[in-house]
Image 1: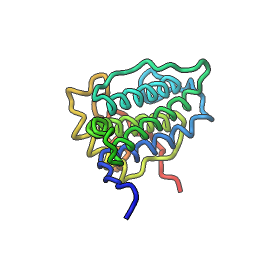
Image 2: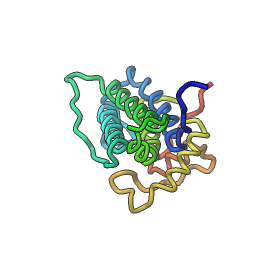
Image 3: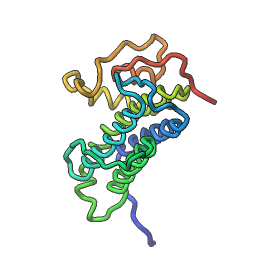
Image 4: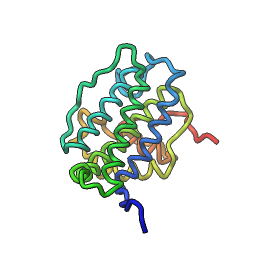
Length: 200
């Protein structure tokens, strides 16, 4: 029997891939939006949020490659579309994580060791900022319940109260009838948006 032996993708990377898919769907809704509109992220407008998402993806790529998390200052061409920049960086991070863990090449050893940590934090970051982008764009699309439930389980284990400053606000109480997305968003310090519902 011939062919490349494929190793099982770690659960963290599989969850990250699902969260990245959600974030990329949110980014696809940006072209019709005003980049100066407000977002759920304090004083950030949509443009600032998109560039932060790009920077976060770059930082997580660095974590996956080196084991160190630092926020880079990436070069961006003048007039670059911030949604396109964010999309490209998210796709690069996704490729870095999946290629580091999905095969048995000897040169992926260190990356394979660092990838799960980058994927765990990255899944939460991309999902919540994907929600921020969708909310800023006025999208009614919501996160798949199974994805939101898995992300909430990961967030509860990773986001401790003393680690919130500078990353997430204090949790807020979700509505009594909150769906999985609303519970996740509330845990991460955002108020669930009214009127969002699952599309057909």
